[in-house]
Length: 104
Image 1 (spheres, rainbow, N blue to C red):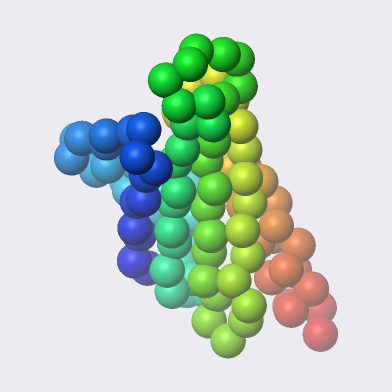
Image 2: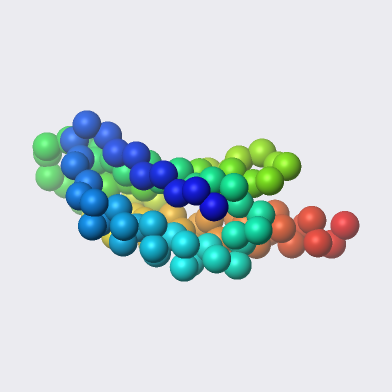
């Protein structure tokens, strides 16, 4: 499973934070690893330099073997909260999709 981290122009992500994100994603999505070929994470600041609540956005796209990609988005006060929210939504979506496949 390949993991790619992308950011908008308002954000600079250090190597250590990227490594932490990749480790978190690998750990949290390990049970789906045989179904996922690639994960793309897109981090952005919705308001640029302005400070406001819920302006940190995380969009995660998962590319599944033999299936269409799925994408989830979460917005929060911090990037960590947005990432964790998006991971939770992705796990729920993957459970539903893969559960339907197992039932057929």
